[in-house]
Image (tube, rainbow, N blue to C red; front, side, top):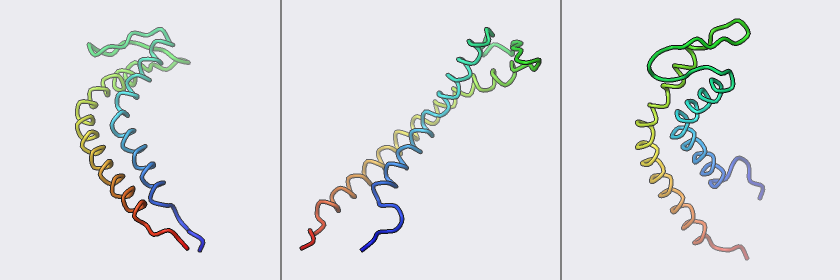
Length: 105
């Protein structure tokens, strides 16, 4: 029998990746904004917008927005932890179902 589609394990790993990106996404965005600001030699902090020119365009407002975006992590971390516990429950159920599956003759 040829299986079509994705197996439960693939969906499980894909959902774990999505959960990680949801949980750590805001801090990754803030760290990237800090790296861009450091590479351009600009100041990046929460006190206000500072000029940050790149090819004649001012990126200060965008970098400040994305730098402050890291505070969203305070909301996504608890939801991510709860989501990971739910994910762990699904993984345990799939593992038990796979171990109890009868072997083909």
